[in-house]
Image 1 (cartoon, each protein chain N blue to C red):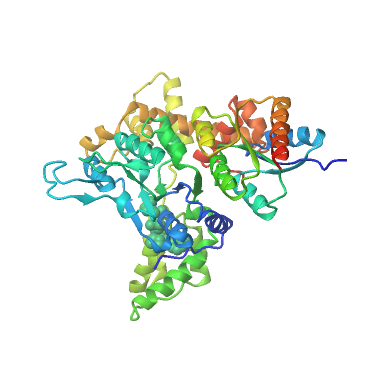
Image 2: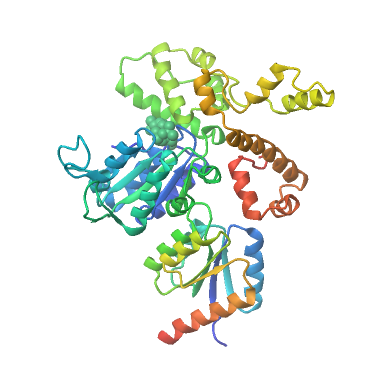
Amino acid sequence: MSTPLIGVSKSILKIKELINHVANTCLNVLITGETGVGKEVVAQNLYAESARNTQNFVKINCAALPETLLESELYGYEKGAFTGAHKKRPGKFQTADKGVLFLDEIGDMPMALQSKMLHVLQSGEFSPLGSDHEFKTDVWVIAATNHNLEKSIAQKTFREDLFYRLNIIKIEIPPLRERKEDIPSLIEYYFRLYSSEYPNNNGSKPGSDILEKLCNYPWPGNVRQLQNCIKKQMILNSWEKILEELPKDQIQIPVAPQFETSYQSQQHGINNAFPTDRTSIISQFVDLSTSSDKLFEDISLKKIKKLASDRVEKEVIAFVLEKVGWNRSRAAKILKISYKTLLYKMDEFEVSPPR
Amino acid sequence: MTESNRLLIVDDNEDILSTFYEFFNSMGYEVKTAVDGFAALKLLRDKSNFFDCLITDLVMPNISGVGLISIVKKEYPHLKIIAMTGYGDQPGALASEAKADVVLFKPIDLFKIENTVSELINQEKEIQ
Ligand SMILES: Nc1ncnc2c1ncn2[C@@H]1O[C@H](COP(=O)(O)OP(=O)(O)OP(=O)(O)O)[C@@H](O)[C@H]1O
Ligand SMILES: [Mg+2]
């Protein structure tokens, strides 16, 4: 049985309505949102409401498998297609026939496989590795990612043509901190569910004080993190303790003061005099606490340039929008970008008017 | 007096939407607007035989123009569709694949698009 999509916020209600209207269209869907926001839940709900719900729902995680394995999992192979292929094996495209193929973490799919995927979606045909036969596919493709694919396209890690082909229907799930109204109903639902799973638990529902604090926590891990807290509470029976243990201040390192310091130090001609200054700037964009092997892999000037310019762009966009009373057409003109680009950027940087 | 032609215009850019609305209104059309594919689909499902022609942008949140075109061509095949895009070739190609009657690239001359609209509608009327 699939999980119901719990929530009373405007955005969740709209997503439910959208699911209802598109579940029988078989058009490619792209679901986006941070980790743990419920992308898979939405995919399952699309499937459950469609006429395909008597067929298979087949999921494949494009981030979890190395390229060659992912390819053979998707398309299957003939006996002898490669060393170790002792007998023929059907791929996910075949198992999902007439049903749903859920491409999870599509943003992590290697480029070469993206090209192949594009070809399959365009032609509606695929052939297993080592086979010269083309099979017709009849799968409903639902893809999900926590990457911002527009950004990945700019960074040349995601094919633009594949993006447009998947993005026929786009379902964006906002992070939990932007729909706090959903928190009480999620707690209610999961409290009940876990209580029935573990009848001997010590849990209790949070009182109104605690509930308010829970609603105001930013939940970087979204619904999954909330679920974990509810589970833990059933053992500890202390919401106070749960609250205490929630990781704090990992969200938003203050930006402005650090930029200021480096600016000032340059003004005084003591460029690079303070290594701590330098690391504090760098640490805004890469995690310096990892091993240097990992660090050297993570550091790329191109990536950092993008991250740094994003930070500044975000501030400038918000600044101009505030100045013009959130008139987006005017702001676009002032910034000398197209209206669409502005909307994209506002979306990408999560710049929205105060409520 | 003949009945005026009915248009549904879809674009997530409010400026474009209001420009098109004013223009077609002044040309004697009855115009409804929607800010994305989902809003348009709800209007269409509500009044399925109301519109003669749909003019839609392609890159939009929730239901894209390409998605809207595919759904409309399947559910309301008589409805004429003009797709317009400012995003290079790919969305345009997808719109053709989804059987839009005409695909135009922005910026679009309003008089030209009005010509296209009336041609499409007259075509349909001659068939009937
Ligand atoms: N609206 C919701 N109603 C009920 N349960 C939810 C909802 N959203 C998320 N969940 C639950 O939270 C957990 C995480 O959700 P899910 O796996 O769908 O997230 P995700 O977006 O796919 O995350 P990731 O990016 O990490 O894969 C799941 O156990 C799911 O059932
Ligand atoms: Mg997931």
